[in-house]
Length: 394
Ligand SMILES: Cc1cc2nc3c(=O)[nH]c(=O)nc-3n(C[C@H](O)[C@H](O)[C@H](O)COP(=O)(O)OP(=O)(O)OC[C@H]3O[C@@H](n4cnc5c(N)ncnc54)[C@H](O)[C@@H]3O)c2cc1C
Ligand SMILES: *[C@@H]1O[C@H](CO)[C@@H](O)[C@H](O)[C@H]1NC(C)=O
Ligand SMILES: *[C@@H]1O[C@H](CO)[C@@H](O)[C@H](O)[C@H]1NC(C)=O
Image (tube, rainbow, N blue to C red; front, side, top):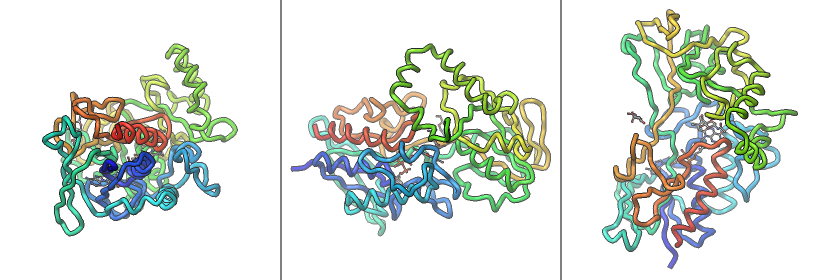
């Protein structure tokens, strides 16, 4: 009899896991708490609790050549870098092509995943779900693939005096579009990919936009030489080989020279303390241009709030600030797992090969897509799914 596998979540990770289960002769059953596929990539007008969220204008930072699944290229008429609505469309045609929808139970939330009493021999799991009518259901599975995404819990650092701030405070998690911010004086805290995107977008409608960064960042664009997609040109085996052979200091020096050719990071207030290849650069085509025309102003780390005045580490202050958006990242949590599987030292989840919790006696539960890569997530999750389904299958 085919082994039964629970797939939790029907974002891109869940979808490719269902497909790999089928390829392996496993019997998948997918639970999705919302009423549709696509996960993070399905734009919603209003923020829903504990669901990942994107802004209306979001365009991918990975090219279509590099972010499609290996056996299903993107349609020819899609642009190289797509708007989020096309990403969802791609997942829809993928789902239809491989007939995956019939394995998905929508509006069904997984509440708990626990090892069965005889787990050390069977490797089986008890899974409890609640359906759309609120009714609880219990299932037994031979394997579990957790595909619930990694951007669910926004982190907002506590700055002194923040309670005295009379204006609007939001997290990039809540950010949808610029309307609310027209004509305002805005401070954005944090320069990741989201912070950079939102700063560029709002600097076009705000009276003034300040972007505060603790560390600075390297910035690269979506295009490399001759306008070819950056990831297509850089995520290559021969380059990996060269990078691994040369000392880190040398490749950092080469990287900095290349990136500073476009705009000097020091001059633009962006210079990080770390090297180009020590952390991933953010991908943004427009940010330096917004600084050049003065509509976006770089600031060092935020020190404190004093009413509507914000003070920064270099001793400068900006008065009459109307709004602050924290682009300070996310924690990933898995509320349905037991606490022993949910966290490790430093609350970092320790996973064997970034998939299997090492404390399990049997490797029948995998956490998918909990990683950062220098390119697109989708093909990496596909490889994780192929391997994890084979492990579960014995
Ligand atoms: C702003 C932003 C931009 C990004 N841009 C890119 C990019 O350009 N390229 C790239 O490769 N990656 C990008 N990423 C990374 C992105 O996370 C991945 O591309 C991808 O969306 C991860 O998919 P997933 O299926 O793992 O998770 P999600 O897409 O988050 O899907 C998780 C699904 O699980 C469901 N779920 C959650 N809990 C439960 C439960 N208890 N029971 C049932 N269902 C549940 C949710 O409803 C959701 O549908 C970006 C991320 C962010 C935040
Ligand atoms: C997020 O994780 C950090 C440490 O990794 C922890 O200090 C913090 O309390 C967590 N935040 C939330 C909201 O859980
Ligand atoms: C694209 O942006 C997301 C969201 O900020 C980020 O997590 C991811 O690492 C970025 N991808 C690359 C290749 O830089």
